[in-house]
Image (cartoon, rainbow, N blue to C red):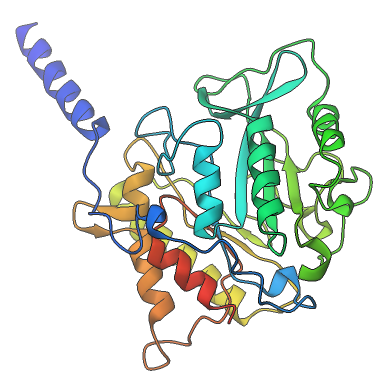
Length: 337
């Protein structure tokens, strides 16, 4: 019995060690330096005739996720009540990934799984409204997901409320000039717009249910088949089972980046650089750990490499990042010039 206790103690020590915060690589131009980025008006000089699909857009995965610990946090913390979103917008982030729980009073609160992120959907819309009023030649693309599945580790929606789509319509109705209206018509998905049509507006790319699958026909027609994880125009292999598997994730991002760069500029692509598991925390996947290069530093190097190394990337599509650095954000933006 004593030997069993010793053995169990050893197993517990290993598990605790694996789950304890392990240092990712130090902050650098690719990782955890978003606060040094300042690109609030980068879309302004671009021609109105430019298709949204033709752009290289830095985005954030789980945009609001700053609480809940190492398995939940995906972004640097610049404050509750949408403060983190506001700083991302100033840095140049133009696609956001918002996860909402249905709460009492037919409201949305922002969650990552079971963890409330000290922000509500009113905070999101208020920050977006304020930013776009001050920078009317910009646009922001939003992916909105109903977060709660009711399963272990997730949240549970409050009962007795209206449907997720009905509640969203109430919010959109209170902000009639915020959304690009063709994208929030639940009965007719929209064609991909030009930049001139959406300046000063939020474009809803897709609205997802708690287990994937588009809700109604909101968003853009091209993303009607965007389900949980990857689809034709989306790379989202989000499970990275261990630190060693970060190399596989890097390759998935790179291959999809090459497809995007060589693809039809009228077709939109969304490439998630994020990933995680119990044994590979979001910060480790993004920044690297235990001698394994993270996705973010790999991306910055790959985007900077010239034709002597590989065919240069000329378009990233929408690149969804955890803990992005200022140099990586600026590099993605620079491809639009």
